[in-house]
Image (cartoon, rainbow over all chains, first blue to last red; front, side, top):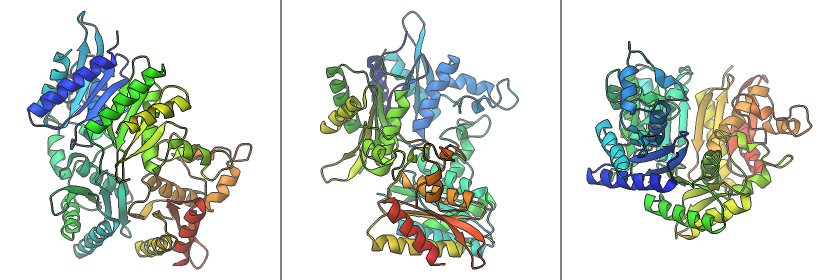
Length: 132
Length: 132
Length: 132
Length: 132
């Protein structure tokens, strides 16, 4: 019940195509069901600091089986999960990370995208998932 | 397309002169286009804790190709990049870090300054860039 | 003077083909001239612990501009660089990491491969470089 | 009883001159009596991995108030300080790090050099000290 490298590369290719279509430069990362890295690509000229953010988004999405932006709502000051980002060697809780499910609805991995606005990051991550 | 040591030392000398002029004691750090350290100076009596901050400011400015203070606006509670500082082994998102460009506009490195108010830090970082 | 994503993906594809040919499962990592990650692939069933090793091999090869195995000869007990692996947040000094040069001989990045014997790791890394 | 920035920059200038004289490219680092960074320079084209090594050499020399190579003799398998490199976030115990003393013989800091053979690293570190 793990994403395959072939699937991960297909998702990355679709994300790259979408990133180019909306004129952005992205870091795209796919992890498996164990939150271990499967595949990664940094588009030429994309932010260097987004290498780690794309990985942390994918990791965060799989660690809690939900879009990273959902965690961000709960991690604000005064909210239930305030500063959860301190755990697990660092989480990223703004949009751009999404769990990946198979046809049966089982989570088989996650994708994380970073390099533009969080809206664009989310759009590009979603394009990767829709290709599967 | 990397800053040279000669350029980095010129920037640091100019930053030191500006720091002295406004009666502050600064840590000044220059990284190259790959965000690797090129040159550093801590003025006598400057804060020890600013060694790391000056490096993280320079790194952050290059990682996202913008002044560090811009990131800080977006990383506040409720904003789009809340808690981005947990990525990349620690970022610094208040002013004092600036990308360095060559005449063609390509980013060749970044400078980070820490040791006084963030306004002074920014002023001293800017003095380093203007010397190039 | 940085490797492009297109080049990095070409190298990874060639390394994967060679890994399949010799019946191994590899983690393959490519970094740029600044030792920042460009592309990565973990073949289905490859060791999870080799994700980090492949990255550290690529990083080590670029950090010292030589095959990782050369450093390993010098880092043995009693040799000149004994325990150099404790620097830079961890180095890997056995074979499988190689610098990548352009036609002019400038180093534009590095490749790191991990997942089998060090001889196989080196062979697969080399296949990636020869594809460029 | 701390080395000043002026002294540190004088030492680095002398080390750079010696490095050029013997046709090497060095990373040169000076720390103060508290083992905190004072000044640093990476010569153009010097190994990226030697940034951290030069710092760890300077730090190690001050942490134990002796040349780094002396510690390396004691950290070999079977010797008294076997694997001491695991402490302090990583030590470097091969030559290239030296304590810096004032005229009264008090240790005021340390210098660390990395980028060539350990003999050359030591020679260049020593040139920095002799300039003071």
